[in-house]
Length: 428
Length: 197
Image (tube, rainbow over all chains, first blue to last red; front, side, top):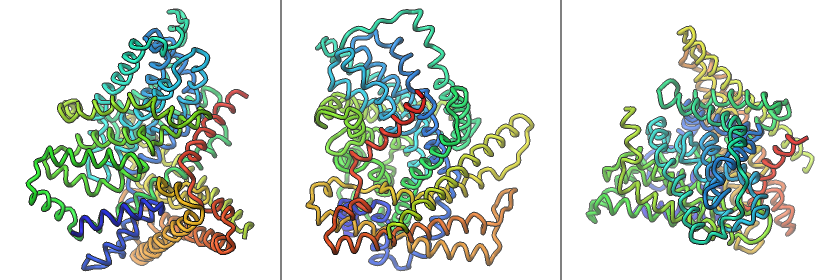
């Protein structure tokens, strides 16, 4: 019964708003005291040093820094305005540009919150100008923002990769097609809604081919960065960390070209990067320790014995895990949810015979769903904050159709694992 | 006491900026490394080690900045529904837990440092940097974090006893997700405004 007790203790400690990093660490200490034959605390120093100086993990601060620079580079507004020219002829108009910009910006930035915030600030003024259905418009921003962690590069995939010993480049390859399909599904959701209720789609925005060609160069810098950062990994020219480092230099070059580079800007970038990195690393330190304790006291073996005892089939295990995440995702902060559960769920899923790369993608999709489901959906808070009026419920309702799209995507990837797996297999 | 916190704030921010700058430096080094590799088939090596050290140092120093700006992640779904007194108690418990766990981490990190010193360990790569150098900066960062946590506890406990909960929330309260989201937005807006000037 150790497994059940530990899980309950963990949920109670984290649920009582103890800082997640310390909560996981302390649960590790308690379990160690109660069940382990040897004091594992002695490993804390070596464990902290070896995990925080891990070369693969350096990709995380690099992508955070990359995003911080992009935010200040002027890429987002220009890209948005260019996409408006190219996509607003569809029923639903600007809402497709919202999703498209989120996909493009999210693909280079690696963080969902930053994506939703950046595109949200640029787009939100357009609701009244063009008489859109406000809820649906807000929904496109909250949901579109989540694409940032599915389309590579993605910080969440690096964390998953390091914690489960899965190849990060393979995860990136696997995320590409589902990311593309999900973007289309989001757009399709808008399309269906606006064909059903044409008034939701707002006024037609004037576009011309001349304008389109003129704004095309604004799309090129983010596209070029995406090609370099992701392409280098695809073709095995560079590791995830190396390509992130190249991305930083590229983003700095664009910033300098747009004349936004200054010492003050660099100082802000450095401080912001260190703070966000620290938040992630603090949780990882606690989680890695907990992970070692869990493995030493044989918790996962115990869980798998339990599964054997009840003769659960692989698909039953998978269903249970999916439901667990959908439930946890409604009230838990997404990053902590992912990090605190990976040591328990991943071994179970692998034992049931599923592929770790495939499960990584499924997990990201589940986290995306958690980001837009109330009462705790970080992207909903971000978009609500940008709007600055109305109720949270407006954004929640607006995001609801996209939650359906996400669930369809989760269903698709379970029914046809090849959606994720064919690209990594192709490259090999 | 307040003065002490201001000083701590300044030191923490300075440490974080240096940590971030180290990361930037590591990124540049890696790019040079890649360039040399493809242009001249030269492998210099050492860039991986450097970036690993930069991460460890930036994270250790970033812990304090995150603590002072109340950014360490807490799950506050239940918290925000509790009365003020209960929330204040949980804030204290959370801070004490952080101080306790990271005091342990720091203690054992010190052990790692002394071992590196005693055995004269060097990095694995061509760089052969004595591990003592990055590990010293790292341990100081961790110790500083524990000190900041204790300082905040020393500020918050009397406030808790006095019943001055506003001061306590200001120093160590959980920043709600909504407030967190607002800060992200302010950062974006500021970035856009500075461009318009």
